[in-house]
Image 1 (cartoon, rainbow, N blue to C red):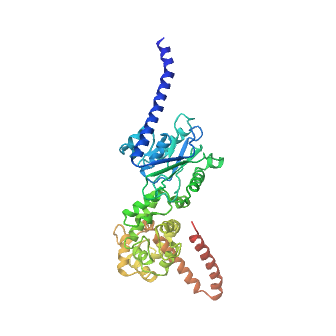
Image 2 (image 1 turned 90 degrees about the vertical axis):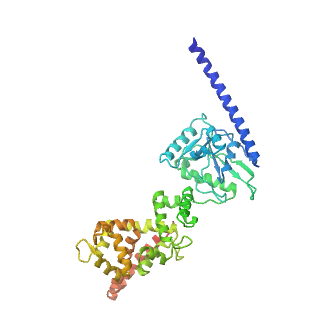
Image 3 (image 1 turned 180 degrees about the vertical axis):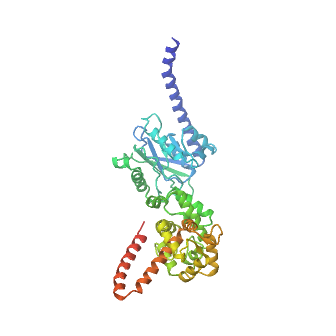
Length: 439
């Protein structure tokens, strides 16, 4: 009997609980509006917000300030995707915690996967969860453009309602306008490609805002901060990370490592760009035809300097492929004139002096760096390790070998020269086109 009474009470208790939750949200929303009003925010809402059954996800942009949280109040306190650090913020952190947020920890390697799974679970819950509000840019910008959207909001393939934010007062951000745009129902093509889905939603929002889009991402912001910490101009980190990483299959840690190398090379220069003289100094080599050839391959726009973007592309496309064992073995044999599988200081010095015009002082420093165990000679293992850590050298010796081959062709008889010259010219033109093509 008692069991039956309890079972009858359960639906009623659930109804009461839902009613209290609804009232709690209404009260919190009213308090939130009062909180922002006290700080001078006057909110204007345009368009109509749809419910979770029509659009489980709200995509909000641009994201420019901590105060953008006002859109959560306007949208009726949906669940949010938020950094775990936001829970520690006074007042605002308490509000975020009450919204049952999807928390993101950028220190947890599994956070991204868990976040996407949670977003998808809530978006496909059939209305059991409130709408999920996401700032797809993933970081704050200056509102002058929309950067690349992260794909988390678009991976579930469910309808998304775009929401745009404006701060009409250009002197003091005390005026806010939220506009609910029509729901974007994804096509079958967009459901299969979150990147395409995100891109098309971003285009819609950019047109409504009257701002351009850019391929820069949150990772570029991280690179900018890292560049500043390395005493480089912060704009040096603006490499359109997502764009080049997608084309070159680069990982964040690798690009960050390349930034450290670039900073070491550019430490003596201003403006975050490297001249051929600074390039030569870093490599402990003089400016010579082989080095000029290598520098020209890095300098993709031909302005006489290398910026970080050009450096990353150059190292990835030009230098790392040159670090194959066959190429390194050929370069090693170039030094190892007596073929005893060891490069002595005399062999090393003789080649660099004749080929690259390196001074004795620079040669001694370079030889010592390669001779890791201080044995007085360089083994192939040491040579390979150094070339892997400093890929510029592998490409430099490859370039030198090509120049040597070209000089041999020039010394051939006229008939051979004409035929070989045509072939060499065609190959060089093809390589140049490939190396310099737009990315």
